[in-house]
Length: 133
Image 1 (cartoon, rainbow, N blue to C red):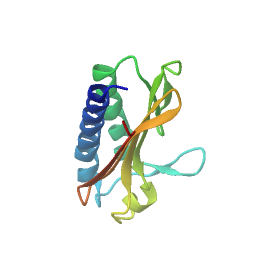
Image 2 (tube, one colour; image 1 turned 90 degrees about the vertical axis):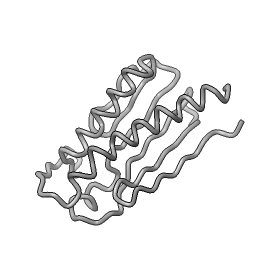
Image 3 (cartoon, rainbow, N blue to C red; image 1 turned 180 degrees about the vertical axis):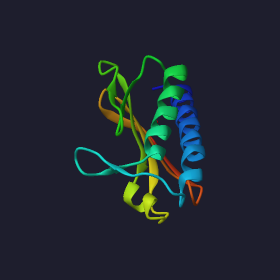
């Protein structure tokens, strides 16, 4: 893969992480409803809204890419590139006011990871991993 392409994908991942952070921060330690999903794991408006915002960025910037998100499942499953999104990994910590959760973003090319981002909205820390050239 050309470094320019990976740089572009990283810029899109950064946009998604920034957008998710903007959605999530106002809900941290705020009163909000928690719903149990079918697997008994919790979900909030912050989870769902953050994933919608990330999906909108992908639809605009990389419409031919696939996406699999924790809250809304798989779109464009035949795509060579697939984004994996977990808007609030650690929702239980999030709803109890503990800042030990994060937004997880990964990009796979034909099932092989090429990019990963972990973003912590409260501490504003971010970790990035990229496939070696």
